[in-house]
Length: 336
Image 1: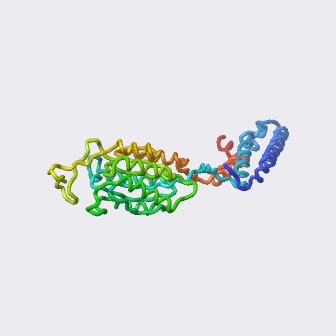
Image 2 (image 1 turned 180 degrees about the horizontal axis):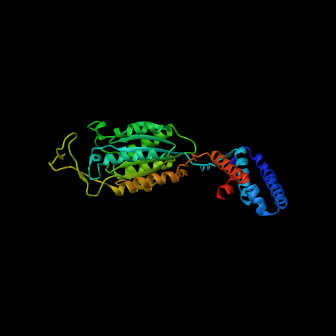
Image 3 (image 1 turned 90 degrees about the vertical axis):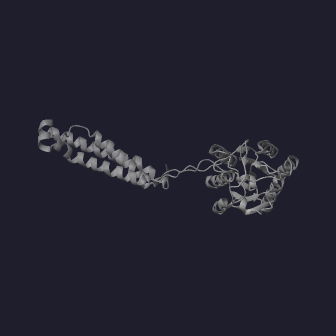
């Protein structure tokens, strides 16, 4: 508890002393009356209460009432814990929208899991600014770095392979990483930790060496590269866009979307970041938790909703009422 007028707390000892002296004086006067009436029995018949007994209950009630009312006068307010200082974090989320991301080896689909990850990062509020892009053979920037999470949430459901040109169905992780770092350089924030979060199944046509080289260049530029893998080792047969017919290669064999977890782990290691499997909710939760830890954020602080002053006033008035009942002897008379 804190007080807006703490200097008034000094009134409490004085008022408590007044209460003690008043009750002590009243008790002594009562003892004299008992002697004057000829004893406790006679005084009880005449007054209706025992004057020779020290009013311990009234004293306790009076002292607590004084403490409550002094607290209200001093402006008691609930103490809200201060948030720990945090480090700014910029997250550039890049989602793979190549045709392989339509695979359904992950429920409900690979691209749907990627969309879920974007939403969870925004809802958790673990980044100061978020950028959103999608990539296939090229990188497409949808939302530049912004502190308005609602803008990113608006675009998240529209991250689908159908948005890119039908001729753009390859995957270039190196081009994506280069573009993400460039987007941060254009709107760099002092003292911020830039995270490039690559959400992909790891299939790429530009080769592991080119991807690792781009990742190391990103690290040299000050960025950290995280990867979120979506897919299974068994892969998923692909279908034609907008159809249930299987997608066939040049030899007439069904095309199966693969999953290169090894490459995604290599990228995360080279990028001094971390790798996460987001096939389930646990992987997404782990990623969000690590982002929160990186920034130094804690769980949101819930501010007290109750007003302690109103409760103190109520308790104080009830205790004063109790003191009045004992002073008039109503409680004892009713019991008799």
